[in-house]
Amino acid sequence: MAANGYLVNTLTGVDICVGTQMPKPLPPYTPEQIDMISAWICQGAPP
Image 1 (tube, helix red, strand yellow):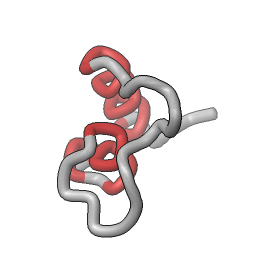
Image 2 (cartoon, helix red, strand yellow; image 1 turned 120 degrees about the horizontal axis):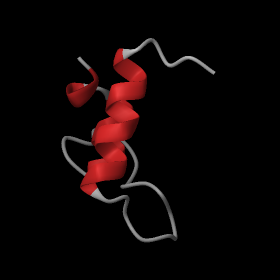
Image 3 (cartoon, rainbow, N blue to C red; image 1 turned 90 degrees about the vertical axis):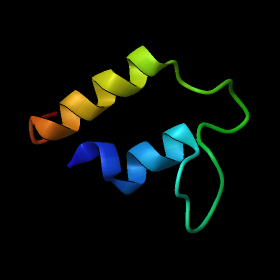
Image 4 (cartoon, rainbow, N blue to C red; image 1 turned 30 degrees about the horizontal axis):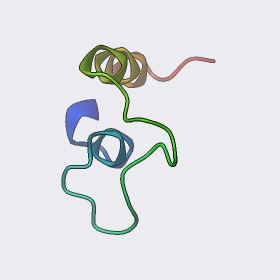
């Protein structure tokens, strides 16, 4: 599931095993942007 994936975790700053929250040095993504990225992943991440 995308919500538990490494990419989404690094965007939200949750359960990061290695590294830090992304994006650096920009402000964090909004919840709406993270939902959009999660939906894109669930659709198979089409180009």
